[in-house]
Length: 448
Ligand SMILES: Cc1cc2nc3c(=O)[nH]c(=O)nc-3n(C[C@H](O)[C@H](O)[C@H](O)COP(=O)(O)OP(=O)(O)OC[C@H]3O[C@@H](n4cnc5c(N)ncnc54)[C@H](O)[C@@H]3O)c2cc1C
Image 1 (cartoon, rainbow, N blue to C red):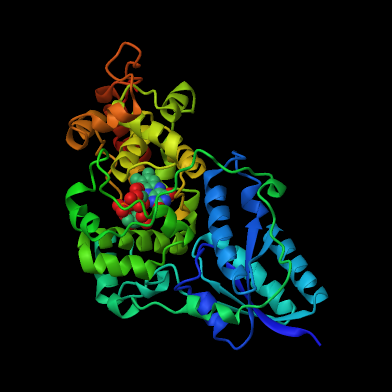
Image 2: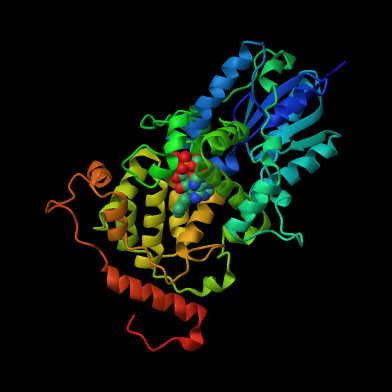
């Protein structure tokens, strides 16, 4: 007779401790097999074979697999489109004498992930398998922080007030999933694809930040967070993205040591809520009127931006830091994004896609949110007539040029390029172009 088991489908929660779905599965009374799907609908589109994110995920899953092997179990790895992958997984488990009773997973709020989960849920139901989902990677889900009339917030400050009034401290406790691993299925030869079999190779140039919730770093955060030359932020973003840290662990540190840092974690939940409630903002302007802005076509200026050769040192330093490490400081992300959309008048989606390709911490909701904020097209965005001056941003946030010198060694020599666009001209052109889109009746004849 087949052995009845439960599966835990890991996605953006690559840890064994304080894992809500794993805990739910391990306390369900059935032996549990963890599963990870290397999703070909995502992986096949990646430009780099030595992708840093794939390397990060693969290494982390390798560590978890080692921990599970110690209790005679492991993660069953599938390299396929999710629907095909689940069909073949269920078939193979049946052939090995296992009957899957239930699948447990933590909820994901991105529109594409929700479509995937709906498709897998109906596939599982057609096999008579229950699909249990859990709140795990946020403290409050998109539908738990709403205005009094039940509609979603579109402005951060009232959202965060409501979030804080929801008794978050009651949700900071962890679950003891790691203590229960002995309840995992004991199985020989659990399939695990190699990176090479999936068409990838390790990104040897990748340096992954460690999980750092140091008390002093958090206490100094408010004073240091805007200085790109200083290691004054946590670099936790990749860990929050892939769930190698638990949000409850991070939130506890925020509540204990830094209200300012806690606010950043609330921004993260705000953008999760925005993408869930306003899925159109993945592809189009959050405020649809801004879809009428006439962007310039991408040419040599876009290439200069990507290469960090615009002649604006803070912009160039940021773009080179991104290329070299897969990371960019938040202040600099705002400056380079504003420069692309306002100074070069290039479509924010070009920048959003370039970041998506390059960032180790790429996370759709925060990336789209950040880009639309900078472009002035998003919720709670900087108004379109406010155009960051990249030179004064540099003077204010990197006054000793320490960050610029680190990433642009030829800065200040004849080899360093002249600015590809004049700030005053660019500012007026951007304001004029946005105004034309938003208030065509008030637009004057223009030279731009
Ligand atoms: C144009 C643009 C694109 C961005 N793209 C991404 C992205 O793809 N992925 C991503 O995680 N963040 C993104 N951000 C937000 C922010 O820049 C990064 O989260 C931050 O720089 C990561 O560094 P850290 O972990 O040291 O952050 P810390 O300053 O230590 O903050 C702690 C955590 O709070 C969250 N956080 C901080 N700032 C923001 C913010 N503005 N919006 C949402 N969450 C925030 C992150 O999870 C971060 O790890 C983007 C910002 C901009 C302006």
